[in-house]
Image (cartoon, rainbow, N blue to C red):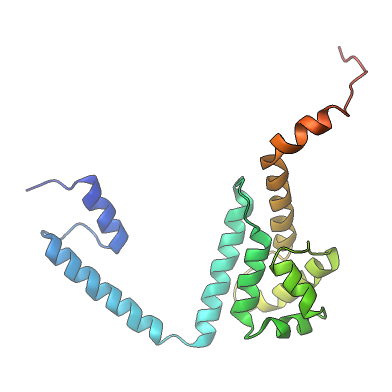
Length: 177
């Protein structure tokens, strides 16, 4: 019997199948059947179930983001906010109305034209606490954690630009023994 190569093992994992299949044709046939069954199941999900799944996925992505030191130039807070709002509301204006801000302010935050104010994040915390109450446990402070983690990552990743300029202004006149 031929041993599986690394490529075969990766393909098995990709299709979500185990290694009981003797031929590639058999494995692909089973993978197609599995995918068809998954698609049928997904088509039968209610809108509420889809929203719940997306919100749980968002929560997990946010938690993973704050756990890892990622230094990239994406605006994760705005991305997460966009997913949150678009998952729950048919229009962003309805969300803006629900948290008592102008649609323009919401648009500016989502499109990275303005940083969110503390009041905005606090309203978002209250809103998400109510939304997630019946779905899963949700740390309301995660919005702040994502926002400040992003700021920290931005600062650390752009040291090359700001450090040389600012080091000239920093003096150390005390000797520590």
